[in-house]
Image 1 (cartoon, rainbow, N blue to C red):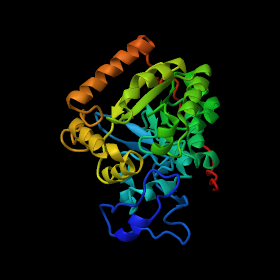
Image 2 (image 1 turned 135 degrees about the vertical axis):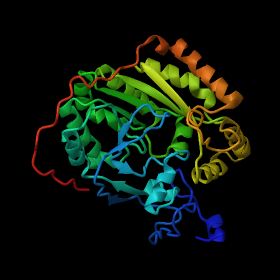
Image 3 (image 1 turned 120 degrees about the vertical axis):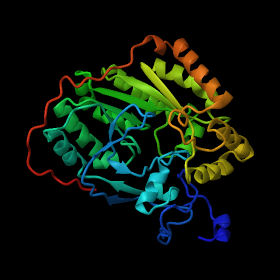
Image 4 (image 1 turned 135 degrees about the horizontal axis):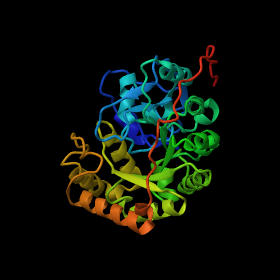
Length: 357
């Protein structure tokens, strides 16, 4: 699409990104079907036949060494999502492609079972998901995340989930079973309590009210639940941090975390376009303050700094977070310590049935 056509094109409805910025690795570009662009982009799903499902990392920024990602790309369409550039490794763009061209892994439960059966496998806490949301809308029909949880529940294997979707409550039977062995915890990610802001910032995620309701449901079922107030964006939602922590505590959250926004690679273009569309008068102010908090760039290159930020604003957010924990009572609660004590190897089964979609 040329620049003149782009300037006249209406923004795609229900999407976080307004266009497909160029991606880093190839000159390939997706051609949308007639009737699909520019005002309406249909989500399409492609099978990912990965040969492994547990991804490991040694990042000091992350609290887990292994993660499971049943999907690549995320239909939630969060405008600020740091994971958008991962789609570029597939030849897609970090823009509309990331939220409308989704790779699904129907073999994930079988691959997970095989991984846990290996003689040298040593159990440790796994995260679902480390990149994209394991409860994005297609999970309702695909049930890949549930299939993985069934394997983990059978093995009593510890897992931490993070999601923006109320759909997590569908699997409360499995999560409660794991929690009984101190092997499950769930973070609900809440960026804003303002439903209008949340809708345009995270267009296909559950509303803030539904996420709080999911917290209550999980808490009442005995599943340890917390809030991830992430990301905090200067001049946009940072003033909501105390209210988010308080609302989460009232809904049963017993632990909390936060991060500050960072805009790596093409995410800066997607988010700048989003600011132009939704808060045009604040674009330069917001981007300028993000640069200050990321060390005069939009994504700090150093571990330990990019998720919490640097400078005056980052220090203020850290102080507000600690005060909010004390006032809400979360600071006095003990966060869950997940255990591998109950882990046992999965039983041998026949070939896994293929999931249909």
